[in-house]
Image (cartoon, rainbow, N blue to C red; front, side, top):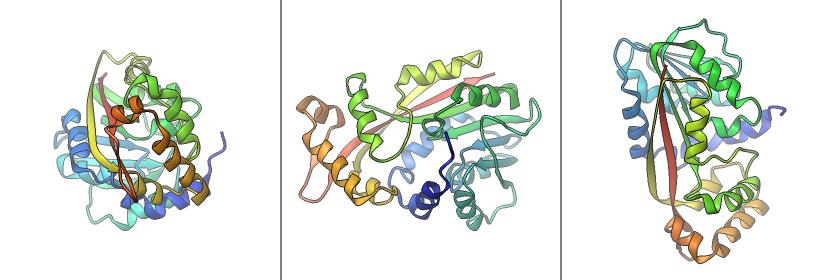
Length: 247
């Protein structure tokens, strides 16, 4: 699949305004599972505008953040006021680092964008980790398996992406022979659909379709999302799975 640089240029402009990106509880849950230490060197794949890299930096020796999007990296570098972060262009499926380089590899909301070769990307993360190193992976998922098809159809109006369930993410980590795989769930309550769409590089026509799909969702689906529909917005509980895997 060809990398769409223009899409990521549009995304980069408003990415830091996304509510879910800045939800502190989600970030704290992600970092807690990583068990970071001042001696650690960390690789943050799909670093985007550097939100995870900047959160981790005070806890570790050094963070290397990589991304395929030069526009995302430009925003990350603009914010860089610390000495222990380096941002570089890179693809998780073809990491340029030597075996056993890093103590931790992190990937928050990255793998749904890896449409081809996700398993290669997991193998690469495993390869560059030191023995006993840890990979921390997180993705947004449907609230339950019954909504997987609806979720995939809805997201197709926003972007090309893969849809994961909890079991898929655990299986993806296990595909690289990590010896210990654990996972946790974080529910981000009452998230604004308006904020998500207005800051997500979505056309006005597709915004309208996505809003209608939420409004027309059946009663069981609305209960699963804990949906609250107001005159000018829709609020849902977003489900995120966080996986930690030890080499």
